[in-house]
Length: 101
Image (cartoon, rainbow, N blue to C red; front, top):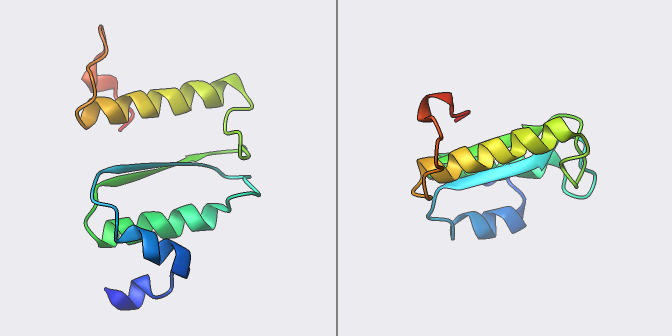
């Protein structure tokens, strides 16, 4: 396990050990401020530690994540489904069988 984590940048390694809760990572594939590779590495480190996590990649999105309405809708649906799955308040009229996660 330490061999895999050792390939992750130090700043991420120093934080991944502090995470004990389920984690949803949301990143834009065209984000120049926070490279997607960092989100992917953090995701992998969480998975190695056995933390239930999901990496949501928004195609064509930069740091703002929701340039197009479809991106905003997709991101919102995933976030609501995540909170619904992990103890958030159930959405009135929501159908768990249509959850994206």
